[in-house]
Amino acid sequence: MKPPARALVDLAAVRGNVAALAAHAPSAQVMAVVKADAYGHGLVPCAHAALAGGATWLGVAQATEALELRAAGVTAPVLTWLYSPHTDLDELLVAGIDVAVSGPWAFDQVLDAARRTGRTARVHLKVDTGLGRSGVPAREFGALLAAAVGAQADGALEVVGVFSHLAWADAPDHPTVMRQAEVFTEAVRQAERAGAHLEVRHLANSAATLTNPAMHFDLVRPGLAVFGLSPVPDIAGPERFGLVPAMRLEAELALVKLAPAGHGVSYGHAYVTPVETVLGVVPLGYADGIPRHASGHDGVTGAPVQVGHRRVGIAGRVCMDQFVLDLGPDAAQGTGDTVVLFGSGADGEPTAEDWARAAGTISYEIVTRVGVRVPREYLGEAQ
Ligand SMILES: *Cc1c(COP(=O)(O)O)cnc(C)c1O
Image (spheres, helix red, strand yellow):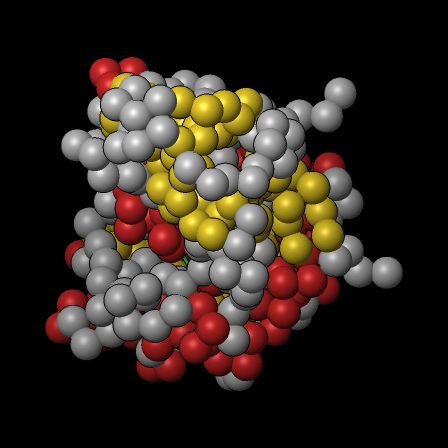
């Protein structure tokens, strides 16, 4: 059965975006971050496309995501950085996944798993250089490092990376950026002095990869930009960086009907038709990731949708499974016609960034939240 909506994912765009990112960071390798189902685009197809585009590493948050990549036959190095004391690290080590270590408990857990499985754990020490999120606090880095390097002696573990994450990467001139880079550089020096043979030092997300070469070190970790969206929309759109948005979200109108002037539309009648007009029902709602904050209110329409060659805004509230468009008195559309919520913008359609602005959020949230009822269909697969 054909679902009434779909997310078309252009894998050629993903390949091209990774190539563009690599060109922005010519001295570094690229770790394509494919967490959260590749930012909603589909983990395995996007991982393959990113590797085809020149990424040499893949990064994920959760352990299950890393295992899914291995199960799909991905042999490239994979790093996972978010797990808990209840995560089974044995499986990760057996699958040859690199693991982040963000504190003493994680170190103990990795060491136990290494001893149990007889594998040498490849670890990347994560230092909190100022983000105030994951990572061992900089002042405790020395102790963790000493323990980790100590465990290298019997082959239980190998410190192959040191990494950190920026708080203000999207504001390249923010003073915290240089400060974090200094703390990071010091941690790297400490690790090298202590006898770690680092393969990679990494700090840059998409924003730093695209705007701040001083943050590249020898591996960059872009996520959002791999999917063609700008991490710094107030500075520049994707085209300025050679990126093409990879996801196009479209749906078929579930109903088109005439409504008289003064007709309330959707819950709470937040929109009232100003004149006799044609309404169109779009079969996607907040259960599918359409933000309720993208609703129209007080007579003003909400997030934009492309209908034919025009753009119309959401009329009234977004519901769980559907929302309504005021297609205008002269609309030529009929039930079953396709509308485009967002895409690359190349054909005049709105972008995920337009939706983010309409909903008061960031494009990351728009694409990652496209729900499980929306099938992903792939275009541009490599031959
Ligand atoms: C999500 C994430 C990234 C990628 O961030 P983008 O802003 O999407 O490029 C990189 N590193 C870490 C640790 C992350 O959690």
